[in-house]
Length: 222
Image (tube, rainbow, N blue to C red; front, side, top):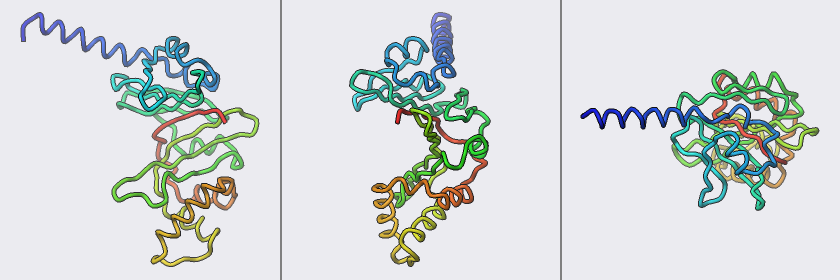
């Protein structure tokens, strides 16, 4: 490699590194960002967001953290989600009465900051396709807030699914397992308030791995 090529490589590397570090995630990841104009916030916090064909806004893989933003037809932000692109993804946020550090906060740490009445665990799927495990969601939704906070946690908690199905439908055999899970998914989709049952919440807390760190953090308008 000649000197000119080496210099160019160093400049490009420095540029990418600077880009990855430029975004101000900590200031952006606030409930106050909800309802604001996407372009204004994007410029203010150097997020690198670009409109996607399928709708919404996302940044590129050049950033340490992946940011996805949903907006209404007036380009006002309705939902923000952030997850790691690299191990360097680091941010801190506070919402719904809970503080979250991307590097250290565990699921149990979140639960210790909120009230049982304000949480619910929502499965990502009930009959997950083979070898595909979608994350579940821990949602914190306080009545006094105009928004909710959502954390992606480890998915497909079979013990939680079985408990809810038995409480709603009674005992079932393994031969009826998959049809029962389909029935459970339909039931909970039509009656999402069922997730607010105290016995469901306590079973979820008992059966999820609370020592794991959530994969992503999101806030959205109700």
